[in-house]
Image (cartoon, rainbow, N blue to C red; front, top):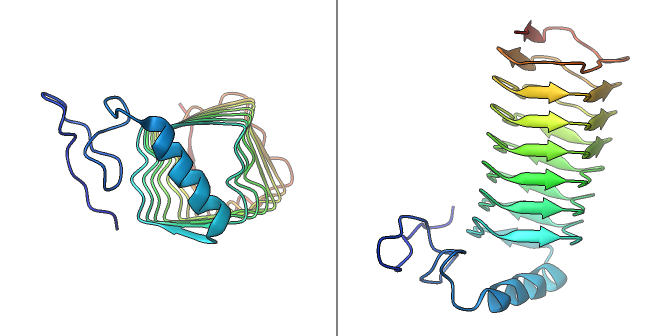
Length: 195
């Protein structure tokens, strides 16, 4: 995993970006950080151990890549595609996703804890052992997706569709399922405790 260092800006307790000395808020040249990342995404099939906390991405293709051990916490993603990507041991805690797609995507041991999703799709994906604890999902769709052993503890789901999904051993404990729909999904061994 990536090493973490505090931002060198006086009084800042945020982590610095990658090998840089500053966090996203205090970095003097964020355009360089974005350009370096775009170059790496364009030339490498595997991106590992990146600390990208607090960065924003709009209409970016992050597709068909393997992301391993990266931290996107508190990031903002709007209109981004993670289609055909593999995400392993990454964290998106407190991140915001608007109109993003995760189609034919594989995730394992990912944390979306406290993240906000609006109008996002997960189609024909394998979302295994993934943490959506405390997440807010509005107008999202999980279609033909395997969510085995994932957790939606204290999550808020509004107008979210789970269609033809494997929900085996998925935990929906103390979650507000609002008007979520579980059409044609395998609910066997799932744990529901709606409030």
